[in-house]
Length: 277
Image 1 (tube, rainbow, N blue to C red):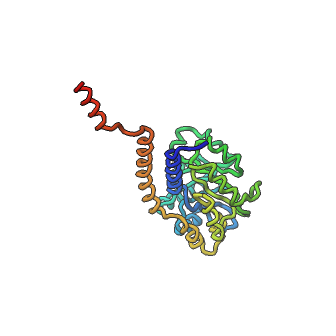
Image 2 (cartoon, one colour; image 1 turned 120 degrees about the vertical axis):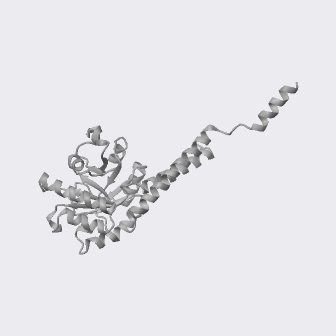
Image 3 (cartoon, helix red, strand yellow; image 1 turned 90 degrees about the vertical axis):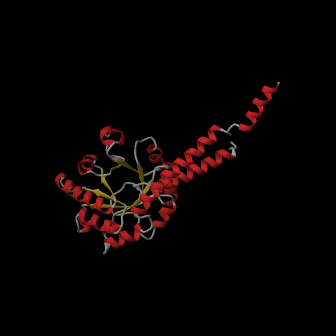
């Protein structure tokens, strides 16, 4: 089907706007997962502190072994840290823990509570991230009430067990197109040596565990990764600019839909002519 020039320009405007909005999402940038895996030799709060010092954009608490009481204590401390450093705070799996700690979002997996089962009053207070591992799952996520999509493992990883093989950068690029305009966060085996591939594939964010947790200087490791994304302050400025862009694009689209304005001079001539006859 041949498109009119006007339609093509509108599509380009919309695509540019979507790209800008994704880049300005609070869930774009570096996600550092802080968990209670004993391999790291430090608790999640210490990990989060280093991630904040390194400029991480999102900190996610992932608890697999600790009691609920301990998990809540960590979550409250991490909420305080992320407020101070301007990062978003996400809790993995547990929307109840996310709610109790005042987190910004809960991150759910394929076998966790389905997003649509989260009560509406809770959903109004929490953003939702959702993990996918195939193009089919990414397609299905388009129908869900979620705020960002994670996809992977992109590369091989030993930080967490996964039943899925590494997906690769080409698959990541395809999924970024599928889930747009929602931001896509790449997961699995990401480090300083391959982060640019992830960004070039269209992922708005990248989630890491061992790239920071196992580093001799975790704050420096986080900083090396985070520097590829805008700072929290720059992102806020970008979001303000995007609000104006949204308004301008909508105004242009409304004018196009309304069609050409009537010619005032022609109407006056017509009225004048009718009066002389």
